[in-house]
Image 1 (cartoon, rainbow, N blue to C red):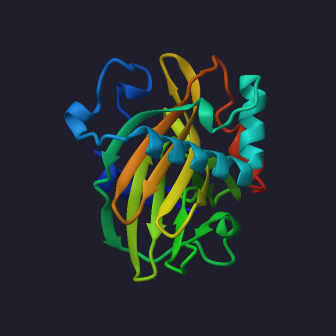
Image 2: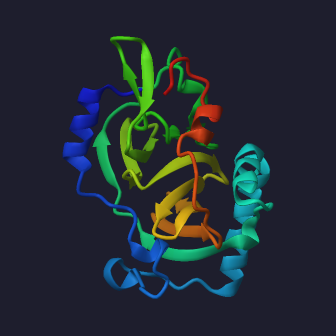
Length: 228
């Protein structure tokens, strides 16, 4: 878990990175006009939705959580592709700071081929040493701590959403589940990342909801004493 000082450092280094565009709420605008978009044919789209189903079947707690929030069972067929883009990843020499005695250690995602871990929580969860509590930062990242001692930031998000869970589908593709809060409400999201080609596909559930307690899933997922 990171300290407030580390938070300031990361925000200084990476504060200019913004993942989301108005594509999440304005379907008429093609975000690829500014950031680059790649065509996805029907066969590939079916494969990606099957991958979302694969992730949901293994992250049943996330599927159940959002099915209850939405009021219907969610599956891959209900996610629409809103963006494809290349990831301008940022690399820096940094070893994984989450060690075995860290409460967040069990919640990292080891690469299936042994090439380090992906971490989606340690940037989000901030410790407060004065009273031994933890709270959720407004910002979040998906970071890959590779075996070669390099950290690669794959995704970053500000206070408009959260990365809630994830899973390696294979040695090349990592799937992140979470939500985004836009003009239409709170909407479950899925981000499919190819770490080899650095291609990102962003999916959103076709239905949004008006109200959602932002920390509801992550507080259930991560069993930390004092997490507020």
